Structures are given as C-alpha cells and as structure tokens.
Image (cartoon, rainbow, N blue to C red; front, side, top):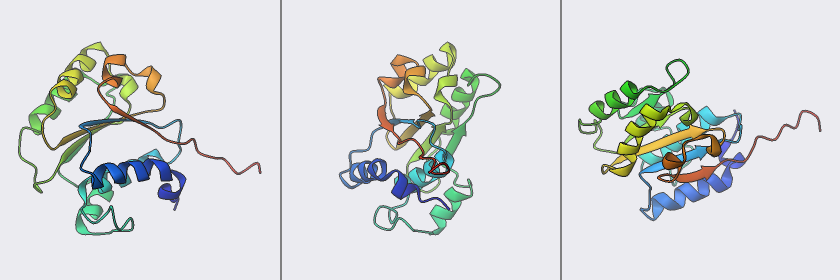
Length: 171
C-alpha cells in the first residue's frame, strides 16, 4: 500500500499543526494536481480530522478509523457529480441531513469529490454553506486544478495543494 503520509508529508504536517493548534478552517479546497492516490489520502484526512489519536499515531486503527476506512462513519457525506454536474438538490439534501446532531458528538464533514462540477445553481447554494459556516461542520472540496473552480468558492476555502505523483516506471 502506498504511504500517502510520506508522499504528501508537507500536506499532512500542515494539517496536523492546524489540528494541534486548534486552527481548523471550516472549508478546505484540496487541489490534487492529478495525485494518483487521492481517495486514499482523503480517507486519511478524514481520520486525522475526526480521530483524537490519529495526530499522534498515524497508524491508528481504532473503531472510528475503521468506520471511516469502510465509509460507514455516519457524520461524513460524499457529494459526487450526478451526471455532468453537482446538483443544487444534492446540496440542499446535505444541509437538511446536517441539521441533526453528530452521531459521535464530533465534527460533521462533507466531501465534494469534484468541485469543478459545481454549476452556477449548485455553486450559489454551496456559497451559502461557506459564507455562514456552522460550528463543527467542515467542507472538503476536491479538484485537480483550483483554477477550474468558481472563484467565489475558492476565495472562501483554505487551499491545500498536493504534490504530483512521481512516476518511477521510466527511471
């Protein structure tokens, strides 16, 4: 298995420091730069944000981390494009779901898997979430290139860029 912590060491060091210093943002835009292990990385980010032991023990395999790994953690929602776009209705449904209290008395997190697919209608709905953040709700927007995401969305997020994958097959 790839070691995303080694490959993206600066990224994880920054995020760990944000957690330790209680400086988490309400919204992160993760620019993947075509990093090939993005899905694995996002799961590790979620574990880091939600598991109190993960910051000090990157190999944590507690029940909470296992739930996240198996995509069974009830306070994480994934928003994926429905067809060519992320629909306004998907975001309204998300907002309704997050009106309930966290099942684990922890943060609630939503991951938008391709933020470039926010159309004008869904982007306006997304802006309302980002402009009026609720305590203990964190947005993670994922895209290959931040310049393909609507500027007003980008301006309301902490931008984190990944290093591109290094292909050693031709070395």
